[in-house]
Length: 363
Ligand SMILES: *Cc1c(COP(=O)(O)O)cnc(C)c1O
Image (cartoon, rainbow, N blue to C red; front, top):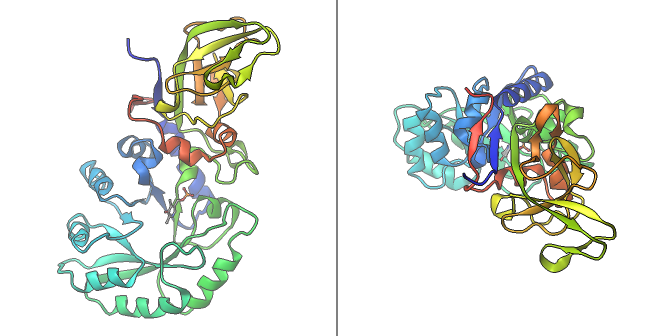
């Protein structure tokens, strides 16, 4: 019998969340962002739920090859563009669209031999200071690209640092607008947070985290507020039960000491499965679909759930670490991430290779 831990990807929820993205930007086309192995879901499994998207955005060339092998003929966008000149050969061969964020990438394009000119997304650094041309350098980059026979069409793009927070997008938007208002071409601006919180005009939105059923601005808004559904369930089982007396400690470092008689369940899930080690006592967890909390430190292969209020729970009880539980119960990944001092993105990307992933409902 394998360890009882498993992950499930919910294709129906992916399709539902994609519809939410469409509803939030009815005039835009939607890139489903599937970078980082579709935020840990697996590109192939995510594709099964997201095939209604207008295109797929990612950054690993191998993931683009996977999508083409799945017979996706529509647009694919490389969000960081080419990493070296010969990547452009793959772009030509697979018909990939790509971001251009620096002069070197324009040089590579100018030297690239291709029959089919490329669709490029010219990226402006409007304030995040990772990738892109400054507003002052943007126009000359655009002019250079327009003049290249290797380029078919240039879309104008930027990325927001604070779309999920108080600062918002206005500062970056005014820089972007000032530098581009007389340039023709389509625009691609919004990530999930901008899409849900700021009604910006976009030709192409780039929806990532919202597709995977995590709120981009938790805890201000949860997934119920945005009408999103969890797309990944991580579940396991209780493999042992202990009874504690007051003064008994639990786990490494004896970090938790009982102040009353307690019943605890040992769950086959630990940080080597991708469950965050930084979750303190009280992190929400479902046992047989009923809400409880963790106790003590998370160890490599196990963690502990409080069963004191769940007298029927015992060995074999189903434990939902996040996602869909039995009988319609649900635990949002954002709540667990919050307890670990991180965000849903990190948890879903970190599910370990030793955890088997399946699809539900089956496709
Ligand atoms: C990852 C990414 C996105 C998607 O961001 P979410 O917050 O997950 O919606 C959009 N645009 C770019 C350039 C990205 O790298």
